[in-house]
Image (cartoon, rainbow, N blue to C red; front, side):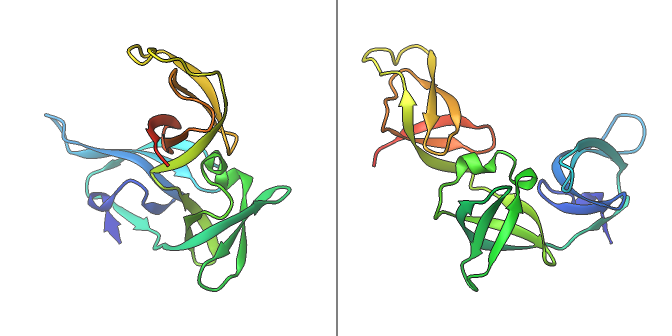
Length: 187
């Protein structure tokens, strides 16, 4: 058994008979009283996020997980189909588990799927992805000094705000955690 000292963002633990992913945590040492750990836990099955506080040193049951690279093939009626790059076996990932992840990956790209035994419990998207703009208003020279933005639609269907100088056909680096524009990429 592990303790609260072993908590990290992204770790999976068995809590209240559910697999919970640590979204964020904070060790707190108040001036009076014992130390504690404040966490946000996400139920992997339902997607529900709860706030939970543990006293420092409490024993927790962490789940040992494995990760493998899979290639995204296509979207089926109610799931997303991935192929194992080693064995070429195909697996289905539910829409609930993908959430908005499908907006950041294109067919043929590789991502990591996290398993507990044979069950897929998480999807690890890259921190940043490069996507092409397919629809936005025309850019104007000289509008780069202000922080004004305009809507843009990316090749995967993702819609976000971009600076005014971005044009259709530009490739952009997108932060997958926040879904925001990072920078324009030359290709």
